[in-house]
Image 1 (cartoon, rainbow, N blue to C red):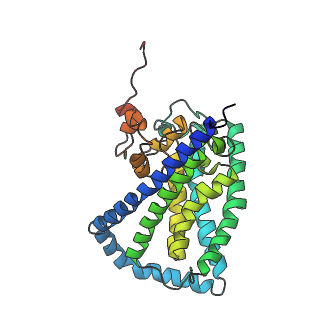
Image 2: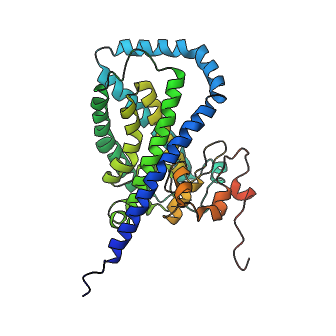
Image 3: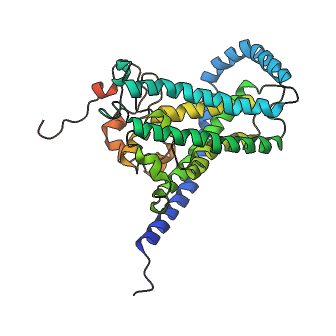
Length: 333
């Protein structure tokens, strides 16, 4: 035996580790780009939103004050209501509507927007029940305890349920920073879980759904749910010591966003789920949330050569993109 040779898996690991380290260094570009984007964004759309906030800011502050006084002395309960109850409702309301379509095919006009045609039509009930059990387990026994830990970490920075709401511009800045943090942490952790030695034990479970539906956004092994699903979302508010109002809004946005990216439908006026749907279909493309790091590291190269990439845009009409940008005809047709 040649003792100087390395097993193929070891070589793959070294190459993957090197690639990930190179990716981490390039992440600085993302942060810098994000800051420039925020500066430009702040001079346009935010001016109009600021006018709205100025007119309604007192209203929201008064509502928060009433809620704050009602929970005076029970800040932990208020925090859990905002970080557990509200996001859970956002997740299940959006997924309840999608499950209605997935299981019944009604209303039929929505099925016209299905990305992978003739898949989940209707969804396999046995497979769905298994996914629902895992999703509920992850929410109750993984996400729940993690949010409890988040509360105690945030109290070290101050009171996350303080009597004053954050200013409009600070809340907007926080949400933008949360998004950048999530993009970086999710991309690298997700890509790491695709390493062969981790994929077969952990991430393979999530990829049982090659044509995803909304609820499987958190159908994952508990370890993956901690590292790749939950930590990228909760760590931003912890680092910034954010107010409950911003944290609650961010959790709701993150859960609805991941639901949309897994829903299997490219619906009008909603963010495009084409890239993540393609990831479930092909496994080794489009690891990120926004696609910024995928573009930097070339992990969307094959995706950019497909019809799915041409459809990866905001749909602003009622005509499904599979109709306006049809697939290439198969040979013999």
